[in-house]
Image (cartoon, rainbow, N blue to C red; front, side, top):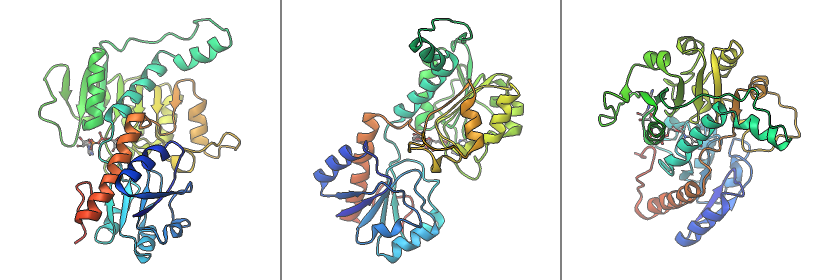
Length: 332
Ligand code: NAI
């Protein structure tokens, strides 16, 4: 079985080669992203493996089908980059629903601590033998209220860590988990109350039509002055222009972003020798109270192993049985 693997990075290869050889799946690694211009590279392969910033729109889906390709294995959890309606009934698409909620939740906490304890500033200063503490005052997490939007796998791990710090949790989820709310330190609430009462807000829900720009000008207006916003989920949950205005007006105290709405043209690549065309991102990065990482929350050894293992098993399960438990929609 031969699979065309798009948007390949050096860190993908060892685990995919290992599990591929264990299960008889051979990967051809293409560095280019999957899109309308590159889809032809998949000709002659039995399937395609894609990641978060590959474009799996109607044109790409139809082209894959025309080449006789029937399976597309996403090596990620989110699938907002897939035209699901168009794909169903044509292409079998699998995903990796969970690989390490700890990786993402711990990265969200790493961003939060870095930001509020000014570690990013202190690191640069001490490398320059500047041992001044001026401007490095942070605040305790203990006793603060954190608003968690989305209490699925990652949100729950994030809540556990926050409770370890002695924080109170206000949670919002479209489908609340009955066992989570203890009526005291962890409480489900309406989104507006979460916005109004949280010192820190962390997003852990999927990107859908409903959640698109969940953090916009109106939401920021409802927040406490100095609120810290963490987004390790999907960029378009936050209206970046509104966030920038919130930071400029001092309403937003800090932002920790592992994802960005327009990341697909930039993230995962070295753009250090280029002029950044995106003025909003450039301005955000220039802010002393904004930390941006390039969609790296998933990037731990454990997560990479789990991603490769589940992706390969998805392909093998479908090939052997015609079904896959992690399929996004079933062909009729
Ligand atoms: P999950 O499916 O376990 O949890 C998502 C939760 O969001 C569920 O409880 C669901 O009920 C809730 N939800 C759905 N619609 C909602 C809405 N309209 N409002 C509020 N809550 C809503 O997913 P998991 O594994 O916790 O992942 C969460 C998100 O994290 C993914 O959708 C993905 O976008 C992002 N992610 C980011 C990574 C990174 O490297 N930065 C890596 C992996 C996931």
